[in-house]
Length: 196
Image 1 (tube, rainbow, N blue to C red):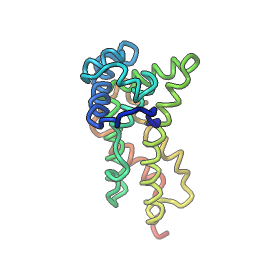
Image 2 (cartoon, rainbow, N blue to C red; image 1 turned 90 degrees about the vertical axis):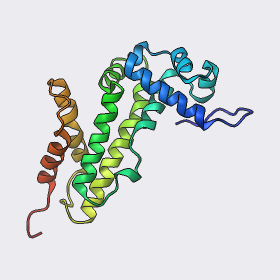
Image 3 (tube, one colour; image 1 turned 90 degrees about the horizontal axis):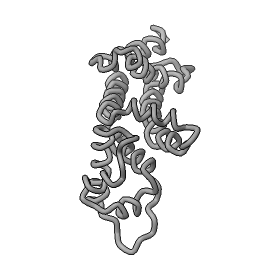
């Protein structure tokens, strides 16, 4: 999240949390296009100016809210590569589904020419941190000798996330085993040969 503007009073963490929660709930129920800052303010029990003291725009608020909902770095580290990757992917799918994220992604792509900052903020606050979680788990696996040392980890991350989007577009979204299937397929492809 961007640094807050300088104000005379200390920001209230409770108000921050209420605003972010309201933004996520309205994003899920209304979608990005219909959601307004007035609605967020009313749902959070704050004034619209209170929101503007914290976030510059609706784009800024929405991407900050999405960032607040994602898994933290510490949650994903358990020492078992398969479990870590599956947990990160399942958290990703829960987050996307809970806020109608595919529609938001479509909005960001459709608005890229007119509102490039929205996609840039979504990428910076949600896409790249999620990719970093997956890459960190893969780097730990490589350090433990569990996967090939020459594996292109950025391509592996894309291969792990790709099935979610592909299944959604094919009308197969919501399969409970998608994360396990994606991880098993990818780990089979990048695993070290026996005896190495």
